Figure 1 (tube, rainbow, N blue to C red):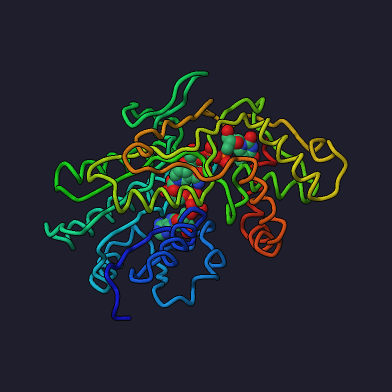
Figure 2 (tube, rainbow, N blue to C red):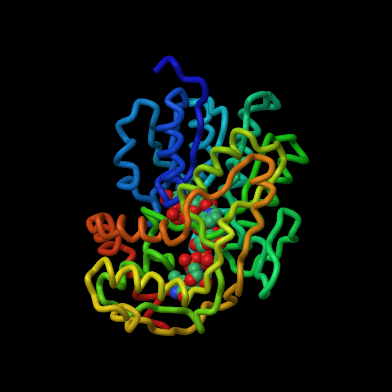
Amino acid sequence: MNNIKKTLLVTGGAGFIGSHVVRLFVNKYPDYLIVNLDALTYAGNLENLKDVEAKENYIFEKADITDEPRMQELFDQYKFDGVIHLAAESHVDRSILDPLQFVRTNVLGTVNLLNVARKFWNGNFEGKRFYHVSTDEVYGSLGEEGFFTEETAYDPRSPYSASKASSDHFVMAYFHTYHLPVVMSNCSNNYGSHHFPEKLIPLMINNIRNNKPLPVYGKGENVRDWLYVEDHARAIDVIFHNGREGEKYNVGGFNEWKNIDLVHLLCRIMDTKLGREEGESAKLISYVTDRPGHDLRYAIDATKLNKELGWSPSLQFEEGLEKTVDWYLRNEEWINHITSGNYKHYYETQYDQR
Ligand code: NAD
Ligand code: DAU
């Protein structure tokens, strides 16, 4: 290809959000070469990208972000203009089972990438950008009132959020110390297609489909702020291109739901889709031991992103949830491939001990 204007490295592009980001960029920017780098851990799945894998401006590289020589080799080979860094261990429950893996990938992997980018760009930062994708969980837990803003102090409570908070601090440290041109965002809970069924929404959809118990942690009163994944991908596009250097942006849907209310809504949608009697799926709800250190409430104030860059969510939650359920029902093969493999073992370990 000789019409390439920019070469971008997207890390974690075979995962849930990463695959939506890759799809958006490959389709929207035919003059960008998108290099998707992913270690293909249990959460990485190239089936997520079947529809773009043959595109001329897309390349996949299997690699681990903690592998310094390999990262250097890839920077030398592709001469990246920008990095959109999503690769991470992302599941809170797994971080409670194995915190060190989260330190390795989320902290050491991020610092390794920052270092390699800094060395490769070597002070020539014109047109360069390192975008770090982070989470609202770094802010800790809210009470009944209030929102997380970009000024909220970090107060991570789980090994996952502590590892993400640490990586965020390193990103800002590279900006202040080495003037690396960084930008960062902290997003609320995403939902949508290609979401790994260890997470609440796809797990519930899959269990309802299979008439299995629906494990609600504690009393189900914890609150999350849900955003459609394609809206997050659009926010990443806008922030990558127009966000101010050294700044962070909160991304969220102003869409708070108590877990138990969300599970009931899903049950109602699934009853209709599966032709079940109203209330049938809800009988599967089973209250189980709470997640240790379970954050009560997350709620994002995304005013800065809206005012500065004009972004706002495009979908109402009920509409997005219905689209999501439809996707899972249409893509049984995708979910069967995942749930028949190593995930089965994790599921048994996680839920049998409760
Ligand atoms: P995911 O677990 O679905 O995907 C993570 C991807 O990273 C996988 O493809 C995996 O193979 C890859 N990966 C893991 N370790 C790697 C390594 N060492 N080297 C290279 N690749 C590796 O995660 P997700 O839900 O898509 O989240 C993506 C990013 O967005 C993460 O940084 C996460 O913290 C952040 N985030 C997620 C949410 C959410 O609701 N899911 C919300 C806000 C922020
Ligand atoms: O807020 C952003 C974060 O959202 C991201 O940074 C994380 O990567 C992502 O996994 C997500 O974290 P949560 O812990 O909020 O998501 P999860 O889907 O695991 O859980 C959502 C809520 O549902 C939480 O309150 C725990 C509860 N839950 C979860 C599972 C898996 C249950 O009640 N039962 C379950 O089986």
